[in-house]
Length: 133
Image 1 (spheres, one colour):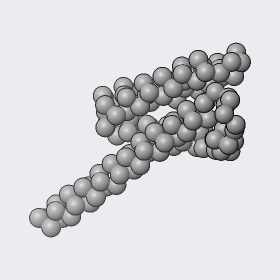
Image 2 (image 1 turned 120 degrees about the vertical axis):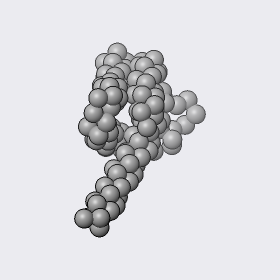
Image 3 (image 1 turned 90 degrees about the vertical axis):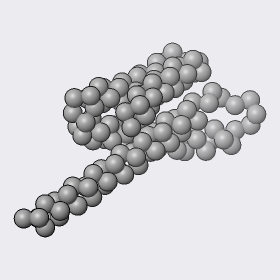
Image 4 (image 1 turned 60 degrees about the horizontal axis):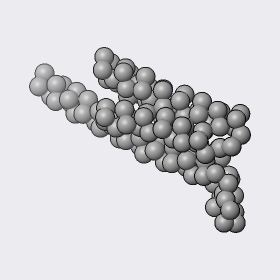
């Protein structure tokens, strides 16, 4: 999970740079890069939290993944508009946003599974200690 978080942060930053390279407008391209750096940087910060406090880093990265997914899904109408365009298409930044949304959703599901597994483990451990006493 740690390596997946590190890889996710680096991929999101790379997607931000790819979006900057694709977009022709200066303001639009820098805002895309800023979003990629902010989200990818937040994932990297959570990765460094994992080293000292595992659960704080996991919960924090799950919240960041939820925010990243929600922010990317807001542009869902743009994905459909881009797919319906005629062959000389505009830059593929909606597809990059879709990739970020999918990656964040996958990571969010993994964090939720991890938290549920830990809850089950603690409940079983608690049952075992109460039966022994």
